Length: 210
Image (tube, rainbow, N blue to C red):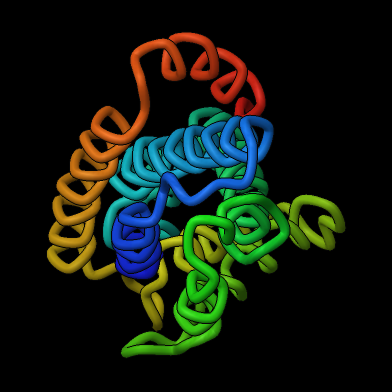
């Protein structure tokens, strides 16, 4: 998951070279809001996704089995809630950056490029779209909520194939994601006025809380 999100952040960053091509003030304001919302969603995907995988470990199922029953029950509830939030964030990100908003005003090619990332397999079995869809489906239609089922969803969320999470790979992806998000944050500061950031950040943050 993290590697696909890194690619999308990079595409958005590259598209911002055309950021000032707007027809009117409303168009610019809408795009600024979407840019800030997108940043906050990326940031939340990173922070909660990293915390979840760190707690779950390389073998989430075994991690739960090693806990006392009462502790495992509480952890399963916590993981389940986190996975639901991640699914909602991925769905919203897909909407924000795939042309259902004003971000495409920045660069008309952005939609096609991002669609390729969301739908491409790269070197993974799962895609960003399928991860988000799986997490959302499980939260809306919980067929089963056993510890094993929730642990399986943690594996899905990691983007790793198989029954174990490649922690070395995930840690490298998280580090790369942190760096590209810092670049994105700096780009936002460079292209937006202090007034725009002050006036619209609170609204963007409120809109992205899950």
